[in-house]
Image (tube, rainbow, N blue to C red):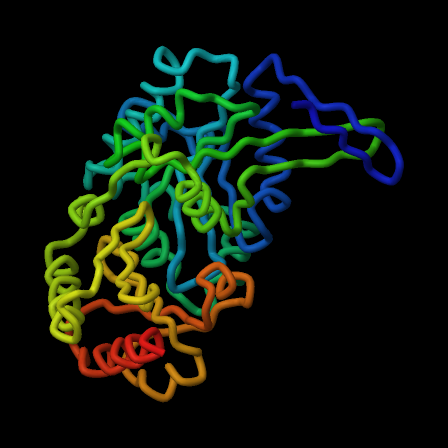
Length: 340
């Protein structure tokens, strides 16, 4: 269904791209509008020469520095929907999966990115302004190694993407974030529509997954979340899980696409497993949580994110099994609240 898009009373025309490079240019030139002011987009094709990732070159690299202690890294692939999926798009993305499994290639890319940034004062200054004192090289390395995604930006719907995500759950479903970008222009006016919204894409995608017909849903497991995770982090999760089950052996463990949630009457704690850490979201108000947590990193959530969880909550980072007593105390508090 065609959308009618107006800007100051002027009806804009949807842009049709015949050449992929024209679509790529729109993404590159408008990256701040599309992804936010705390993101940095690097044009790999033009500015970082000879980056070969598994025999393929991405259209860009994106760093999301919304949280300087948890920087997210994306290989960006810009595609036109008219291109054949299994002959063109699928093999291109598959090469990026191989890169993410190759430590040597990752180290090479980290070195090239760091060299490029430090040799460009304007970009270096932008990074330093968003890092809040975090060391540049370590921040790049942590993001590339531990917060890996592939951002697939396409100009129209492509049903084969969802099909690939249902079939290849450990690669396409886990690593690829598809975004549909529509561009509308007339004279000096322009509007960009990115679906889903980049700033809350994981929450939106998770919500859409729950609304699908049962036969269309993917049945996620804990092992799905353990793939590519450091064994020490898996053991840490298992230790926390054992504590929860000792609280109540009937606690339901419910793995979803982006998280594992524990629930009895209602959801009371969420776990997001990363390569080298666990992000825990307890259903406890931030003000109560900060009275309990003294030795772990934590941060408050905006109201919009708390509304998605349907209850007051905040985010906590667990990197090792030290000071787990306060983690257990916090989980007990979340458990008591869901009991009413």
